[in-house]
Amino acid sequence: MNSRIVKQSIIMGILMFVLIMAVVVVTNWDTVRRKLGLRSSHPVTVAEENPEFTGGQVGNDLTAFMRDEDFFDKKQYKPGVTVENGIKVNVMMDSVGQDLRIMVIDALGNLAIGTPFEAEIENVGRYVDEDRDGIIYVEHLREGEYYVKLSQMEGYIVPRTKTMIKISKTLEYKALSDIAYLVLNEDEVDITADDTEVNGALADADGTEHTATDYYETSGKIGIDVSRYNKEIDWDKVADDGIEFAIIRCGYRGASSGSLVRDSLFKDNCLGAIKAGIPIGVYFFSQAVNETEAIEEASMVIEECKLYRLDLPIFIDSESAGGKGRADSLNKEDRTAITKAFCETVANSGYEAGVYASRNWWEKKLDAEKLTPYHAWLAEYTEEPLYDGYYDYWQYTSKGTVDGIETRVDLNVSYR
Image 1 (tube, rainbow, N blue to C red):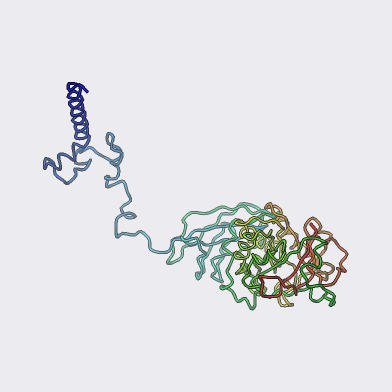
Image 2: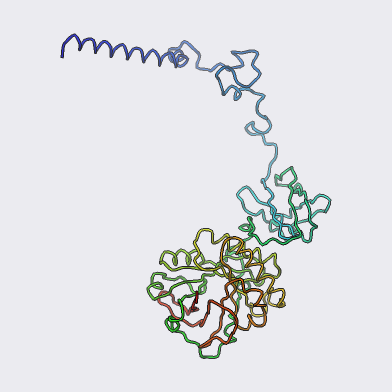
């Protein structure tokens, strides 16, 4: 390369470097002055440089307001000074029919339990959370708009504004968005008093039932239904043993307490079955005593199933709790209405709905004709069902044995 061209290239490079450095110095002139000791390291405030400064933006300085002593509420933001002391809570409300549920929620999203909160419904009255569970129930309100305000409570910061909710006299079968606050784990209840479902099909059994998994395989698909009572399950072994579907208990309403309780093995069973390639459905043991509670039960199941793809229906398990359950004494008309409310709520949420019951229950405790829009799951332990009504699932024994399950297990055939 020509030496003259080389020299020119070197000179141009030096000039470019000097130019870039000059731009950097000009851009950061204040910093350079401070480094050279030409300016105090203590920054001069906008107010000092501009005696007329009253806050807001100064020139291109978008942060000037941060140095305005009057911009922030000193009482609220000044370190060490607090306007109020206490636990901050908020209010969530939901209505089913003409009933209202007011829930007091803390900052972590949990029910604020242990305190008798009081809520005032404008032009109606005051209501207290007597059992201190964080929920105030108000029944039989007339249709209309209501304004609710939580009363001041020592130790808590409550909303200062009122909240409005509309009450309808028409019962809507739709899932409740706040149902998760009502769901408990099994370690939070007395399961010996609450999880007491009784297998009604045992009363119909006549000793002719078959217990083999392959006896009815030519009639339809063979499946199982399971709950925590079946303990931990090896789902890969279940699949290898020929099981083609599983209906898994999501939970139950406490037969004594009335609480909504999640089956402790529901998640594990769902994930295990899905991973093993077994199609799943879900069932819920109901102890609802009215349609409102049935909607709550269906809402719980829908909420719990959001993470899973269901291939089969969501069933309401309608049977007794040994005569001691809170819903055991319901008459046929009320039980049918409750069952329908559950199914309608499930169906309106985009799932298939179904009803599980023994032959005796289908014939005497439910009006089967009013439930024909939904799947019917019959529990009858005989060689052939004596029930002459419609059904598309049949639980034919509770004494089945399946590889991967250490307990006896219910076996079913699906005619779908």
